[in-house]
Each structure stands twice: as C-alpha cells, then as structure tokens.
Length: 520
Ligand code: HEM
Image (tube, rainbow, N blue to C red; front, side, top):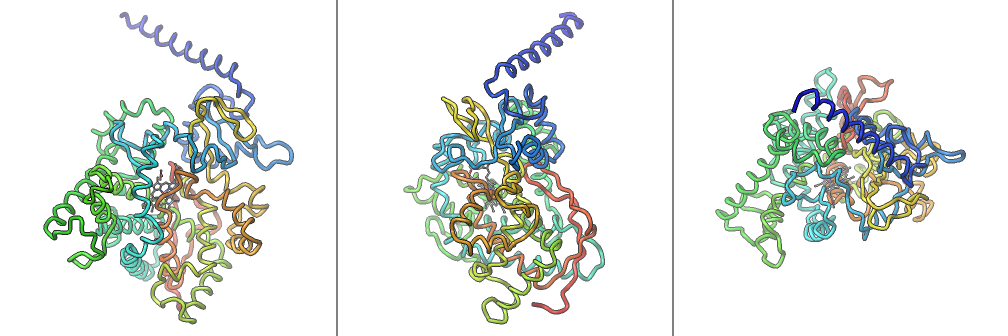
C-alpha cells in the first residue's frame, strides 16, 4: 500500500477509536461518577498518574476533590473509563468468600504464559484457594519459631553494620540498608542462605536491581494488560529491562531448588521433615516445601515448590524494607514516640522481661508501644500504594452507593483508607502510636472498626500470607536498633520523597547513625 494511504488509514483508525470512546463514555450508566475528564475516555490518565510514581497522592487528592459538603472523601471516584477507586472495604469485593477476582492488571506480575501462574497475581479463584490452603501453615504464627534464628543472624549482622556506619560522620541511605536486611532475611528463611547483601553492603549478582527494574514494568504494563505478552517477548531479551529482571530471579529460584534437592538426597532427608539439618541449620521454608512434596498425600508439585520460593522473594523483601523505613522515619520525626519506645524497651530489660542484646518474637508480643509504633508506621506509609483491583461479576454490583456493571474494575487503595479523617479523626496525618492503645482500651468494637480500614497487608481472601513473617522481621529489628543507635535525618525540615511503583519506596531516606551513649 502507498505510504500516504497507510497514514490516512492509521489516522482514520485513531479517530474512529476516539469517537467510539466518546460514545461509550456518553452512554455509560456510570457517567455521573466523578473523576478527571480524560479518565472518562481512556486509561491514559491513570497510566500517567502511575508513571509519575505519585499515584497514591493523586488517588487521595481525587477523593478529596469530589467530596460533597460534610464528607471528607467522595465515596467513589473514576480513575479510568471503567476503573473506580472506592473508600469502603466492601465485603462483596474483598470478603473471604468473594467471587470477584483480581483484575487483569495483575497479569503484569507474572510470566505471560497461562501455565506460569504464581500465587500473588493468580486470577483463578479456585486454584488460588487450593494453593493458599496447602501452604498457609508455612506462614502461620506457630511456624515462626523455626525461622527466628535466621532473623537473629541477620539482625546481628545489621547491628554490626550500623556500628560501623556510626563510626563515620557520613549520611547513609537507610532505605538501602533495610532493603539489604530484608532481602537477606527472606533469602535465609526461604533457602537458609543469605544473598550476602548484608555482608557486602550492596547488591550481589544484580538481584535487587533485577527486582527493582521489574516494578515500573509490571505496574504500568498491567494497565494495558493485553500488551504484556508482546512486550515481554521482546523485553526479556534486553538486559536491564523489567522482564529480564524477572527471568533472573526465576533462574535464581530454580537453581536454589535444584541444589537443595541434590543436597537432600546426599543427606538422605527426603520426606523426613527434620527440625535441624546435618549442617546445624534449622529447617527452612524450602525444606518444608520439599517435605510436603515428598508426601504423596499433600499434592504438592515441583512447580509449587518453585513458585512459593519465588513469591517469598518477590513479595516479601521490598515490602518489609519499605515498612521498616516507614517505622524508623516516623520515629525519628517524632522524638516523643522514640523516647517512649526506648523507655518501654529499657523498662522491660530491667525487669528481665527481655534480653539485653536481642528481643525474642515472644517478648515483642508483650511490648504494646512497640506494636503500636509498627502499626502506626505502616498506616502512615503503607508499602503498597495502588488500588487492589478486582472485577465486578456478571449481573453487576452495588458498591459505595453506585451500581457498577459487570466487568467494572474496582479497588481500594490503602493510602486512601489510612488518611481518611472520617475514620481516623482530624489527626489522621499524624504519627500517634497511642491511637492504637487508646482504641484497645475503648473496647474491641473501636479497635475492630479501625482495623477494618487498616490495609497495609491487603484484605479478605487475598490478604498477605507472609504478614507474620514480616512482623517477625520488624518486631525484632526495630527494638534491637533503636535501643543502641540514634538517627539524625539529613533533611529534618522537609518530607522525604518517594516513588510509587506498587511499592512506595523512599528515595532519600538519608540519616547519620550515632551510637547511643547510654544503652537502654
Ligand atoms: C511489611 C511487609 C509486607 C507487606 C506490607 C505486604 C503487603 C501485601 C499486600 C498488600 C498484599 C495483598 C495484595 C493484593 O491484594 O493484591 C500481599 C499479598 C501477598 N504477600 Fe505480602 N506483604 C508483606 C510481607 C510479605 C512477606 C514477608 C511475604 C512472604 C514471606 C509476603 C507474601 C505475600 C504473598 C504470597 C501474597 C499473595 C497472597 C494471596 O494472593 O493470597 N508478603 N502482601
């Protein structure tokens, strides 16, 4: 075809597509739901918002902008032609038995082949339920004990590193150090093997970089999920691209699994489920998976063992690192709270209720102020900063006072929920750990009410399966470091800046570390 004709054809196609979008928007039964003008016709508005890395702020701004008199937030706003952000954790959408599946936005978090599913983005409700049931024990509170030594080892190395950093006057990037810690802990818990980041103080073999580069790709491609298979095919061949990063992690996971299987055969551990292995290390996550695989009753396959290990690294490293940064950042910004936390640790140590050099997970459960500080840190800065998209089923559904037709995508963003002054009160923007203790004292109803709107770990049937593990990592490390070190922000008078590509990562959390004169 002549090039000019080709150009005309392309222009005609674009015009027809635009007219179609205008027509659909004009006739849509949800056209009265407020939102940016462009978002009525195209997902480009949302794409741009996510691309800037500030989507949680835009999301909050929209709910505020369209609030009616007497409301803090508009209950529902539009982010795209059929994408709606809501402020209520509606049970139809998120309840444990909900039939609304994750939207195709989650496709960007997996290999495009339908056979290569993993737990977090799985959109098949039945398969997801089966997987979750099979493996939830590995993440249960009762299993944490077997992972505690791995956390202790990493926390001790982390403490030594802080000691070294304290002897220099330099500002250091605390977000980086928490990332290094969280990666090594999840590596140790999953494979009894630290990645070695803590020891070297940096990324080894580009693993952290691999995961990092995957974030913008997965976050953005999911908005136009149909593009994913084509882009992935090309990008996986380009070093440094998100798709190549994912491939690297998959290779790493597979290699660990194969090495361990060979080792277990040498040690003759297959199917034995021992608590401690011949090399003295406690049974790790991978051993537990392989024990299950060796038991024919459990229906655990090689593929399960592969994806569950991979999920731990992808879902459990940055999330914990960001959350640790949040807690420490707000403690530094709120000296009164830091002081109170140190008093709690000091008092419990004097009373012999916790050890002088480490805090056991069991002891940490009794430390009310510590628990409140962690909860409050994750409220003000949830690690995940985009709506948790779900799809409305056949027949449509009434959500937040609006009837949404089948196929609509609907989601609540933890950041929107956590800054809602109608829920948290006029001091919703403040770091005030006491609010959790007061709510508990007021009675179970008040606490339960707040917890309904507390979503750092998601909600309902897809709530974070690894949350107890992350609590184990955080509740041990935070007291261990704040009792020994002080932290001075490089820019104490301004807010930190963050980039939101699903995880809202701090970009400039620079502090000077100082050893506390008097410990406890
Ligand atoms: C403070 C740390 C963490 C935070 C804030 C966090 C947050 C979340 C959130 C918000 C979800 C739900 C996402 C959705 O609905 O789309 C989720 C799911 C998940 N998380 Fe976490 N997470 C953390 C730590 C971990 C750890 C340590 C692991 C693994 C050891 C883990 C494994 C998973 C998995 C496998 C899912 C998918 C669960 C499912 O679909 O049933 N997470 N997490």
